[in-house]
Image (cartoon, rainbow, N blue to C red):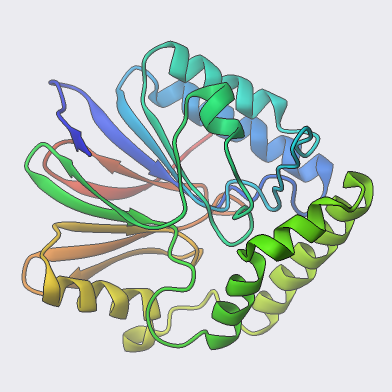
Length: 254
């Protein structure tokens, strides 16, 4: 994927909106902030990358999608109608996405990191779950969650039942992670940072862009690369911005 920026254009990256959590009222307020941010960037945006966990839970039945988020999806449709490319990545909370966004909103959906080139800079972009060393328990769970047979059985639950079960699981998982302090910086043991270094040893990228960790980070990778984590929108409201030369992490002031 190649993107060429015109003067004044920028590429934006955001992740971990967790729309739907922890309750409908809080989620709706966050959704309104996200839409205000999208309104503020649309004149400069050459492309927008939504890098996973946009929804705290998402499952596409053959004829049903989760209730809510209509203003957010309406804004995504508006940006696409204005010709702004949008690239969507699944995260560990919304990995059960299929073709709804692609067919209805003209937004491609990726489940794994992809390489892109913006002007003359090389990027590797993805959500980040299950990458790098460690986190073996989640890697096993991800194999279960992405198993076609498991998804087939789940979809035969009535949506009112299936979505309620999944939302409860999603909420308890998030609380468990907070109790384990998994959103604290781990220094050299940051497994996504280690993953970037492993990739850099095989192929150079100027920028590695990931979400998932809920930590706004800018860390060196080798002699020329940098790893950026986009943070989250539950409390920090951080995003990535590339102006054609420099990449930076910024906070939305609403």
